[in-house]
Image (tube, rainbow, N blue to C red; front, side):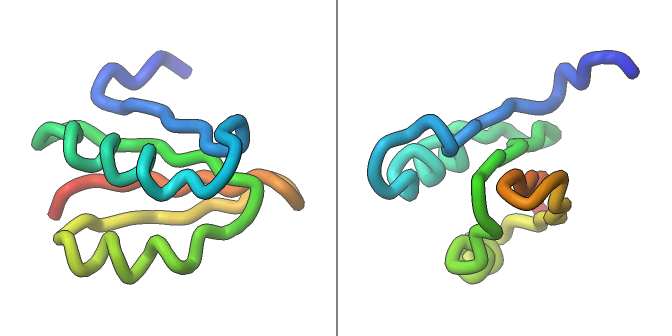
Length: 75
């Protein structure tokens, strides 16, 4: 499987404290046609409402007990 050049990855498992600031900064930098892959150690349910309010579409995939991937793009 090749590398997706339209995708940026943000792994918040390595961020100390609440990662919301880093997530919103990454979303603000997200250009049309690009996607953000968010990797977290839990399902980031509180983020879903924020994404919907800001006009983002997302798809969540649980990879393991402590690994969730959320693929985010602009609608």
